[in-house]
Length: 469
Image 1 (cartoon, rainbow, N blue to C red):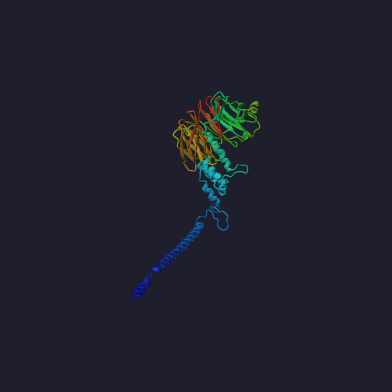
Image 2: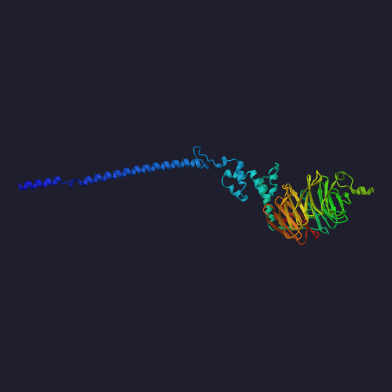
């Protein structure tokens, strides 16, 4: 009994003990938990993928809308914002860049290269570099002929010229023949001729290429102080108070306009279309109409051979300064004259009266040149003044040297001056930069330049020629 009970108790106890199934249950629970974790991870991974796909899809949509520089959608063809903007606007924007940056723009892409090679763009760049700003409006309306170069080539040509002025490297030569100060000079670029008047009372015509005098004109009894050439004729003014007209084809004096054109020496003059304007130490500017003299087939020698007396012409008009008239220029219906009274007087040739007076110099004015809206004057007060003629009484800016200004010439933005300190200087009118080209061994009385060729008349009777390279 005892044994049966014990066995029953043992089996009964064993039956009631759950140990034999605990391992299986835990494994099932673990597998279930791992499965749930895997399901959760899969679910989270799926959500992340969904979010990523959604994000990328949205980003693509945003990029398509906001980054319109390049569009690859649908067509597969590149389309830049350049093609969507007006060419005129793009050219205007690029026109603000420095010229050196334009070359870099050409390397960006084909579209930018086309813009950087635009004809009008290079006209803007040329204007910004080589047109003094008061004249830019007039320049903008200029048109080229079919024979003209591309504006890019014109810019390159003038830029090379400008860099040569500051190179300090030049070839030097001299013309010898005068025996006194060379007071006045004119250069004929088309025919390669130089015309000079001297203290030795003569006028000479030179061949620049051959560097020799072609012929000499005699007739004045005192130094020749001024001359001009127009349509095969030359007019000269002298300290002998006379005006002479020369036939350059026949190499002789054609006629004497007047033996007493002024009460004192003829200091400056200009001839244009049969009209001569002359200025004198007698404080006057006179106009002379010489069409009949030019059209006459008879020369001064012909009339003298017949014993005809000299008949002096009467001036067409006389204008008054308060002192010696030292320089003048006539263009169209406007004439400007400067003198020892320190002012520039503007004359209306149609109305035959003074239309303006420009005041600003502290001493007498020795030389002037005007074009369009710009007047440049040089004075004994050692300054060059740049006048904006669009303003009634002439707003101006000043460039200062160490000596009194004796002569000047300007073209585009290049100005060259000669002063009594024997220094010849080049200026850039837009930037105000200047370079001392050279210092002469004697005083510079007159000068002319063309491209990078500079010609100076000196007080030691020589003509100095410098070719900047």
